[in-house]
Image 1 (cartoon, helix red, strand yellow):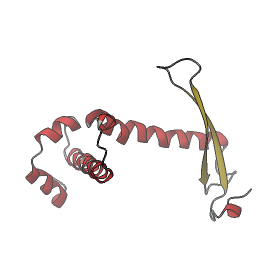
Image 2 (cartoon, one colour):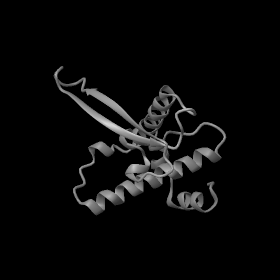
Image 3 (cartoon, helix red, strand yellow):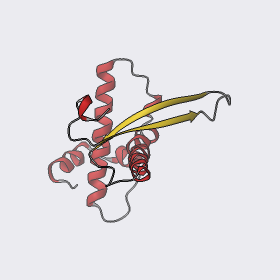
Length: 137
């Protein structure tokens, strides 16, 4: 089946990636297999299978090591037990705002910057508003 046949005009390839996940903290036979599908506008001549696989791995590595790590470690998002959907969405938005403000701060500052968690504790509302307005404190 081609990408055009399934309604993905402009895409040249559909990629299926087989994943076998084994949880290290569980019994040895607790594995989970999935197939993830990706589409690309690159032709077969533009990228090899290995290059496409590296692009997919790089994408997920950046997400896990970037935003998810910060949300999980700095903000303890995995430990949060907010049951109300609206409140959970609001907390996620506030976490995203804090990460974005921190990024603005560290981009403008040339030297060493404290960690995200420490910076959030010391940041005053007036400083956050200043960052939003001008991109600096």
